[in-house]
Image (cartoon, rainbow, N blue to C red; front, side, top):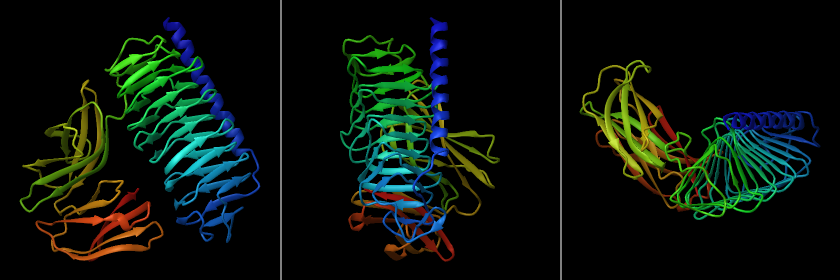
Length: 444
């Protein structure tokens, strides 16, 4: 049986390598009618941010990309649905951010590849379409529907209320070695082929139920499925794919339940972590989490060299969105503070690290993020007040400001009603003299 599993794993890996090689040949050896590329931040429909075939132009790719290659290398918003058609290629490059939370992207006989970040309402991939995610994708308003070929080696989150992830009959969804798919409150429905890359910690965390439904539904590879509700299996389930669910159903067989594997979902997603020195020379540590799953406790450690850390304190997980701790007896000099978490099964993951020096740390934290109607801004390290707090869109245009914010103990807080903001990506900045700090915020 071990030999059979080994051969199966080797076969899956060989197929994946072949698929990547064929993708390389397809993408890099084909000729498109036009090659569009961003040359600056802005809106998709702005004809001043594009070049065509290497030359800046007063042009746009259009909402229906047909036979063209479009490369996004900057921060971009879109306020229309986008279709990737007829062999076209839409590529979101490293460090690029593309945001259209009220609109969807339909991949129709084309290829959507994400290495940077994509925030959108919905992604659909038709039978001849291809989706590759090596970056970070959030789908906030509808479903992720794959009827073609999809590969997730980055992070894919379906965050909309009761919104599903669906892998249709005849479709193939591969979760790569570093891939993670999270469905917050909806269901996962697999009617096709779901492949976990060998020796991976990829996972699907369904807030609802997981349906492996239909005679063609197949789950193979080496990975894990974590389900908040019921796991229903009516198809084939590989014994090397661990699962953890509240209950099970269906006519198909499953391997024994395993909730102790390290190949589970991201137990914690941290939206912000700050460390600041107060007027009493104590270090206040605050962090906000947007996801907490099977988490037992958090640990704060410190280091004077960034390599060798010592224990400071432990904070039990309570399911809250915000946590805090204090280093009552900090050491002098530059000090690194590291936040980690420990699962109920004892597995630990390092989350984020911040540095505090003898000078007060200046920081800005905005929450909730994404925001819908109200945004709280917490600022630290501003001794004599804050000259200006502003919100700018991705083009740099200021859309809101507040001057002369008082502080107490170097800290200032604001509550901003953000109904006046259109959905998209913004930057919140706090400025004192020549010193400014900013944080990225998404309005949904």
